[in-house]
Image (cartoon, rainbow, N blue to C red; front, side, top):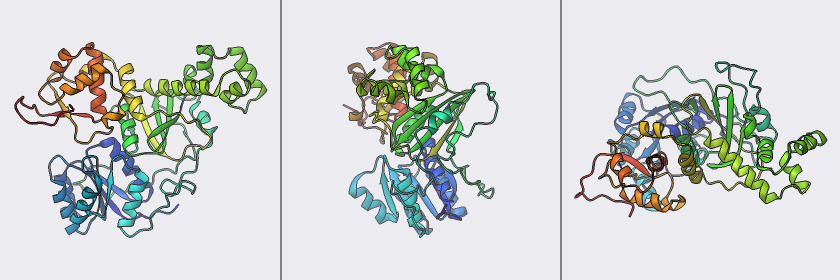
Length: 433
């Protein structure tokens, strides 16, 4: 596999850890040595210590004006690429380029296109982005339709919770190259495309997949339980689980669309045929009903992981199989509805402290029009202008405490809301309504 960024040092400046992990993983697959920092001052210090070959900046930053950092990088001869969910449009792109940036991406953006722009900026041959060609960013090939079920269906008895992870989705993507041991002490470790769920929960990972317009497989493991979500350009297209109750056949039987005996008979008669295809071809369910069942299956598999705080996650870039259903499951709907259904009151109270003030985020991962808000939620959102603490918002809400907290936390996860310094009632602040 070609490695156009081999020997190149990339500085990644971003507060969003999950999104940074996707970008770092894609750049590492092109051979880059990636280091990450979260603030502008840390970035300036890193450049002063040893200028990288290129930098990706997620603007705005909490402590330094973006123009100052872009200008500093340009003067140091560092090829800078800017991404932003706040600065948008042709005028923003023109301004960051005038300051010295090589390229500009609005959120959401394709991670593959971003790292290809980095390659061009440092004078390397950019990888091909043609979906019909082999994936030059990841070395991946399209996932065959039988591979995900085979990979996820590991026996519970094969390994204990502390055993080595199975070779999930073998062939979907090439392994990451080993990280270089030589790294300036002033830089943080680069974000990883895998890690512990205690540090990055599933809803936040889903939001990062949307913002990065990622295509590939998110694998989630907790003890012997393994679940998988395939996304294409940040949209879920498939899910699988080794929990028997979450298999398509079990769901069909539970919903009364097929009997256990009929499923067994069809499996024996045509072992290589997918059950959904068999049910439709024999007239037992309609194609529309099959789609409804699969959509429910994907939701159930994903939502069951929303409260996981133990276990591991890993993201492997790659292209899903072309032979698949068109699920039409927007990520915004999955995250919001999943938080409504799965969030527990004790966990919400831990994550949303009563004294915290919430206000509109400048760079929401999802626009408000993409959210299917209930009437009570829209009214609650209008109150989150920074003048009220979480405890005040709960008291003013027209729904029970758990429902109010679940909605507020979902908005935080989707970066529609953010924690702010307390705003006085007389101050001017942009609200939602």
